[in-house]
Image 1 (cartoon, rainbow, N blue to C red):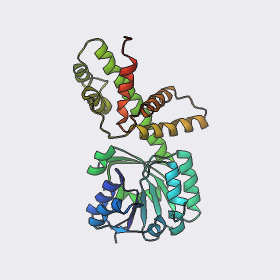
Image 2: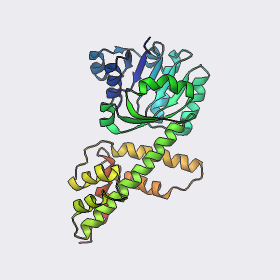
Image 3: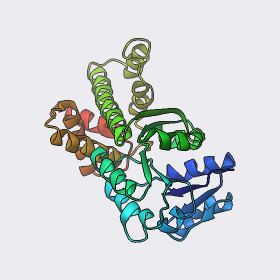
Image 4: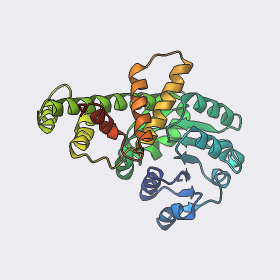
Length: 294
């Protein structure tokens, strides 16, 4: 018997993930605030529910792909939210990037109804969502993870049960720290090479053969050379994620100076009107700050 899957949030990530479930033969029902967002899924064979509550009443595993912690809370506990229709035994999976501490609180509230919450943020961007090659970092109970794993395998390539509730969100926060810091380092390196009058493309080529090699240098270094910042991951979303990192660090009295610097660059990127560009467009700021005075 097939597991019945539900999906809320059919945007740049949620839509291809739901389509991959359908392609694998998984019965899927979706909810979308805008009918046009659900249309491609309906055309591919998905059912459509009138509300998150109605969706929760008819599925076994329900995936949420929304932007931020308040959005998750609204989908879970707002008017006609998931909690109003959820049956005991339902597994809810938050695949967005949210606050680890809020995630733990949400899980505790749902547990009172016999509902299990997994936090399962992803890395890999739109391309990974389309190709089903996402990296999925999961927090929550092992039994709920085991139930969701066959569905995760249609969405991602690397799937790790990191630990208890909130652990997936902690892993994603760590991912964003490393990505943000490395993007800033690559931006500084490319700018340094150019100011020295050296071909930055050749510098990148050389670095890719040594210990400085990274996916960020490979992908985002090329973006910087081409001045092409069509988003894979928008700057304002990276800003949101780094705000989560710094809020958690504040609660722990934990100093994260590099993360704070990355956030300031992202704040400036959004403030300059470039928040819809890929977050690696902080290169523009590094370049601008480094120009000699006229």
